[in-house]
Image 1 (cartoon, one colour):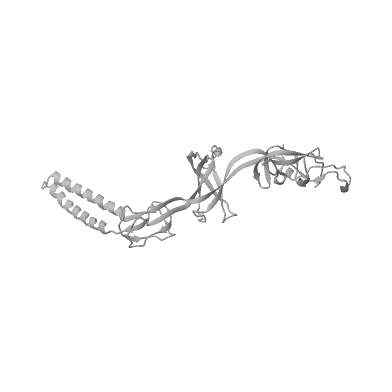
Image 2 (image 1 turned 135 degrees about the vertical axis):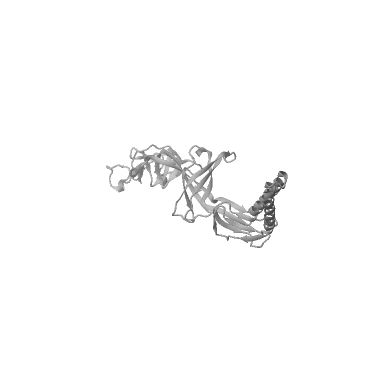
Length: 331
C-alpha cells in the first residue's frame, strides 16, 4: 500500500524540455491515485428520545387529588410516591377493617373454648380477608408511585383538583436516552447488538457522544426496505435532551479502495457521467469515465476507471481534453 504522502506528490514531467516559454502542452499538476483502506462509515439523522416515559394516571376517575409531591424538573426514583389521592374512602374502609379485626380477635378464643362452630369462625376469617384486600387495593390506588426513574416533564394538576382524564404527571427517563435509526437493508448483516455508534448534535458541534446498538427490530419495512435500530446513549452529564436531532455514525467495516483528490473528478454537463484525466507517458492526457464511491475528507474513492499508482491531473482541468499534450508542473 502506498503511503498517504504519495497522494500529494506531483508526478515527473519532461525534464529535458526547454524554457517555460517553449512549453508545448498545457501546464498541469498531477497526483498518484492511492491504494488505501476505505472505512465504510454510514451516517443517519434521527431524533433523540427518552429511553422510557410514563403518564402518571390513577386507576379511577372523578377522585380528588390530595397532594402532588413533585414539581416539573424534579428527579424521581422508580417506586417513589409522587401523588396522593383523597383518602376519605380508604379511611372509612380502614375503620371498618379495624372493627372486623376486633370482632375476629374476640371470637377466636370463644371458638377455641368450643363456644362457636368452626363454620362461624371461618366466616369471620373470610370477612376479615376480604376487608384486608379492599383496604390494600384502596391504599394502592390513593398512593400513586412512579414506575420508572426519571425526570418530571409535565404537571397538569394542582393539589385539591378533581382528576379527570388528562395524566397528572409525565415522567421521562433521560439517562440513558435512545435514538431510533432507519437503516438500509443492505447493512443488516453488519449491524449487531453492542455495536458502538458515534453521535453528534448540532448545538455541540465539537463534541462526540458514544452510544451502542441496544436493539435491532426483527422486521423490515417493505415500503422503504429499511430496518429500525435502537441506539442506547448514556447521558450522565445531562446535556442531551429528548427532541434534539443527532447524526449517528455506524462503522460498517472497510474495503480496499483507490483514492484521488475530489478536485480531479469532473461531471459531464447534462449527464451523470463522472470523469478525470490520467497522464499517459508523462505528456498526454487520457479522459477516463469513472465510477465514484464515498468521499472521505477531500478525497473520493474510485470504484472503476483508475488503477492505484496512475497519475491524474488536478489543475488546469478546463483546458484538458482526451489526448491533450501536457507539461507536468514540478513541485
